[in-house]
Amino acid sequence: MRSSGDVRSSACVAGQLAFLAAFATIAICQPAFADYAGKTLLMWSSQNIIAPLGILALVVALSAAFFRPEYVQKAIYAVIICALLFFVIRSADMLVNLFQAG
Image (tube, helix red, strand yellow):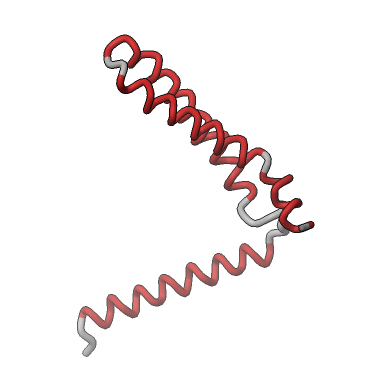
């Protein structure tokens, strides 16, 4: 009779193998529409995560100016970081081409 630890570990291994098989099947069967790995994830994150966070940081900076001016500087830094990330992600095609050519 197998102990519960053996059953759990074999179930964990079986789950990992099933995930790997499903991932490999999808990767082989689906054509790659992206120019580089992770392009769609980067574009999605720039539109749905980084841009709203930048707008939220701007709103926080404007509202914090009324109550606590020391928070404004940190919120402005957050807006600048979000803008830089958004720019880098949006220009990733050009950057990848530059790295591949150079």
